[in-house]
Length: 262
Image (cartoon, rainbow, N blue to C red; front, side, top):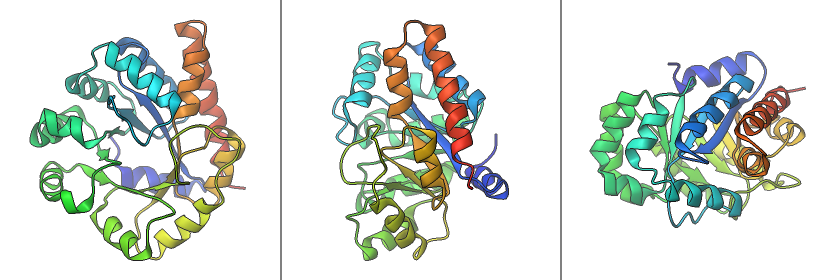
């Protein structure tokens, strides 16, 4: 499996941003989530974020919340998340709030993810001040740590958070929750410029990207483009499993073209 560094370097050599796609584990079913994710990869997604469903997803908008609720009703567990990671044909991250990881056991989760072939974890609600055990454990298992920064993050705080990151930095394009939008916040490019002043790590932008035009816009200044709600919305609107797979693959193909810089 390629490392995050290799994926971003390859994308840069092809004059494009890396495409990162999100899908919750266990949505709409355990079996279908694996098929949907691999359809995303077939369509051109470079890196996959597997969502670890949580009952109180404070960063997530209504579309992802609905998907998480479906997954929880299906009984999706930490082990199910790790099993899904092992089935993915691209470098896979887990996107998780801290509580489910802590409940499963920090060492258990990091070790299990490493054994499953996972390359990193995005922890949107974990602060660097509370990360001592996480940093030690992820270093031991060679798991990348991705923290989230936002337009409200001060320059001093940006430097502190990015020093704790590895793999890439997740730049939230706006204040608020996840969800497809008609346009990407203008504050995103400014935030990326500020991050570049304090780190050499790749920067991926998420929150709001839903189509090829928006992906192209973000790719003009970021190293990675993150898309989640737009994929989930297609699944929710589909008439059948095969329809949802086809729609997800088509959107991935369109976004893959979009991340190529003019």
